[in-house]
Image 1 (cartoon, rainbow, N blue to C red):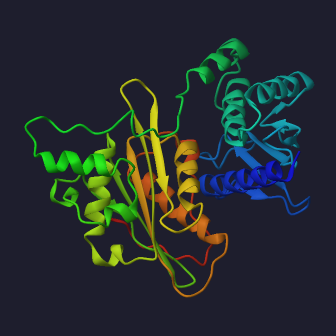
Image 2 (image 1 turned 45 degrees about the horizontal axis):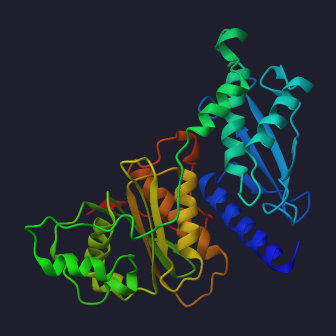
Length: 348
């Protein structure tokens, strides 16, 4: 492995860890008893039933080798002996290992897929205390799980030539020329003179501020179905002078096209790598037809990597509150550190 691959692996690992910490703020953590790149995830299938005597809970520990994800998959250990009242035997461990290996593809991060797969597998294999233990109805074949994974949406990189917004023939020609001049939405380009802000915008939800050491982070969320609507939303936001003069306006969007493919892109707006991290979070949350803009006002104190956690946390909470996160298991139960201050959200 050459130095360039090592650097790319480290960046991918850091982005994956930040996304998982934002999605699972209470269940996912760095393992203080092990190496630097060691983490643990506590999977509790009965988290909504705190009074159960034997909750179905397991702890998954894993280590990220320098060769992950370019060559090797993470090293993992299922450190729990029981899940609820059922012992995790060798047959189950073999099935889990086979499932994990089938999900790993070199160059692609995999931990979120592992966690999701393990939750589904244990739900099928281990009965709740209130359920009848009917193995025939609880067990599904690995082939069915593989088919379900293959049916997942396929994302692809943004190609403006594929989905350039087309104005109806009876619309004004200047607006069409304007779209062709700004194929890829960026905050800087949309601060230039344009007429997008004169068009009706979809409803825009604006969260209250997350404050961390005098820096403020606010998320803006709107439903969009094409790139033109992304530009309209961003342009409307930039009409607010406070937003336009913010230190950064980090942008990311995901749109499901009629053919099932996902159109997605991001813009850092000067906050290096922040747009890509925000888009990665949206991919892992599997949100669609939505644009997110996170506005940051710098408070004079450098936050280091914590700024990326704050960006992802305020975005995740806004997406959750607006109902874009369909799977209840990836919502999480809270935001960043206890020192952050949250106010009640409002809508525009």
